[in-house]
Length: 102
Image 1: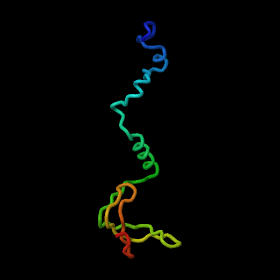
Image 2: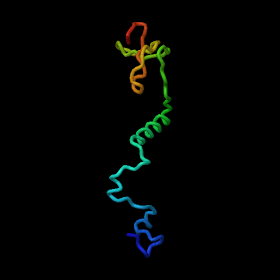
Image 3: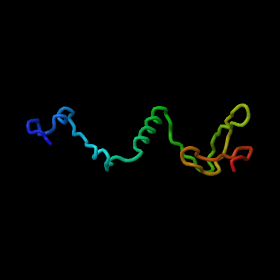
Image 4: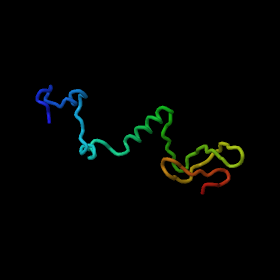
């Protein structure tokens, strides 16, 4: 109930905090302007911007360098993309000089 003596006929706590407080029921209902997962994508964008990460798009037949972890020492080797896999985590399957990845 608004206070008749307060400025703007608002509650004393609303005058103090300079904003309208939400009730328990208003907090339970999802708002139309908030989208699910927006904070995760914003956090990912900030992390990528801070660390200089760039989006990379691979197509079938692109020449790439892939890290080969076989053996005691890992090395970079030239490869050609054969097929696309999951878009985010593993962008492609590579075929190297040993014919792996098919």
